Length: 393
Figure 1 (tube, rainbow, N blue to C red):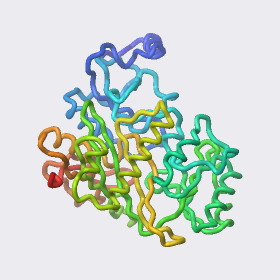
Figure 2: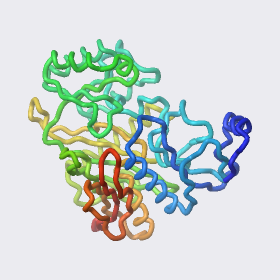
Figure 3: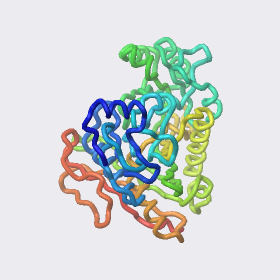
Figure 4: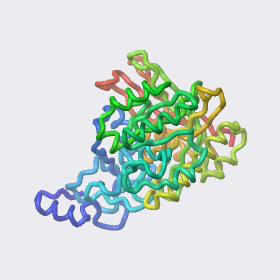
């Protein structure tokens, strides 16, 4: 790795777009900390741990954090902390296809958020540049009933239409882990919630208005491509108790299949509800790639909510959101890929990620430790991934 000491030379190379590679051979695996709202320490450290594990899996050097002012020998493989937006990628971070990263690149910022999931109120509604109405038509009932709005007036009208059928959940599209959400049951509460939002944020990021469910189980369905190896998976998320007593994400247990969607659906003993979740995630995945041609993702994860409609009691299932970046399940994905590659006779394995709060927890032997320490915001926390069986396949 060569460091450019001449700032002017570095700037010229960055402008030329040649800063990140000097040859076409394999380069190091680099972790890219995307510049957005400051994440918690454990989130960044666990993601960088995934990047380090990916380097080992690929037989490449781990180069640490991507530095735009450095030239790397060979063609780097990037592991970004967030989904990349094509128009705002840093100079030198050249991700041109699936072979360049574990994550995804979208043509517009909204494509990476919950705003994508639902259609607009009507064709006269405000929309950001690049919005494709056909996505909502193509994804159909693979998502819950809902609408997305990008202005106060559209949000009020969309909310009022949805409230005619019962309580709705308002969701800020860029909220993470359930943050930025609230349930409203009448027009007054709807107007108050919308009025409390920053107008510029609403017009830029949008607002999701979605049917509210109770007794919800969230399924995780995904697809990962690293090199020429493809795996797909399904599973469920669990909750654990944080230091403040609240319920938070506690991990995911996955059934991971060697190969694409049909291989996953072909596994025995899948529950009917999980087959529905897989089919809905696949439909969302294919609709997004069909409607947004410049989208590509080597890591795709879809959260599918399954529960009871709070107003009617009817059972519903639908994709809540997409994730085209490494996330909470990525540790399990990596250890599963390693196990499947090591034993070609296996069609599938079971893997899990676990998150536990408190100083008393220790990682089990052989686990991939993603974080084990004292987070300034969350306190003592352990995060790890491991194989828990071969799924009988």
